[in-house]
Image (cartoon, rainbow, N blue to C red; front, top):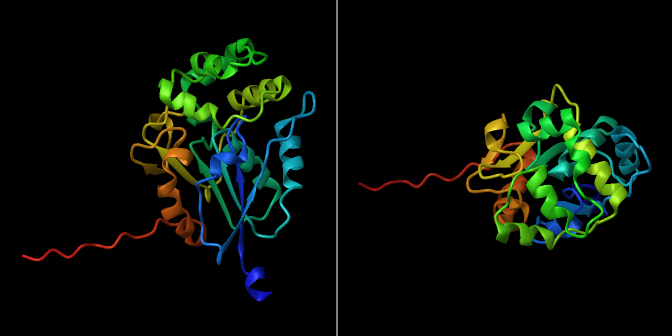
Length: 235
């Protein structure tokens, strides 16, 4: 019973429209960590991001938990963190303030162009890639689509609107930001103070899962990267 109480409870929030299956390859030591997978709720009509975050907080059942969010899920966990006492807050392939949004998203927000994305169509992801976030390589786009679980128009309109219009002037200083240097959605040139994954793309939680399995445990426990052992050279 004592060991169970000492477990660190980790809540994972997937990216926009994605299901918890994006974390299927994440494997953390069960003796130390207990993983909980959050899922998107369909937002109420005109629901604010703050109110949505409050609703999601109801699914967090443990004290001093760890929140980990991917992409738009990273924005959600930052909003949830305002109502929780956390051990650790980690975002992956996301942004931690409005300044880190790419110019095309800021433009879409200012002009309202995000409203033109045809979210009612079955292949809305193709349009979103072209209109809002730039062009993915075909192979990567197909891989990402395998993990899309929500096609509800009300959710998609709400999610896109709140992503491009997210307002956050000052990020949480304690946040741990993990970002790929090949991220096509949130280019690394706009990102500050992040742990960089070389070669990591926007979907690196799926195709670079070994990096996360190796490094997340230490990041969760200490908030720092695991020190790599130096190889002693013999002359």
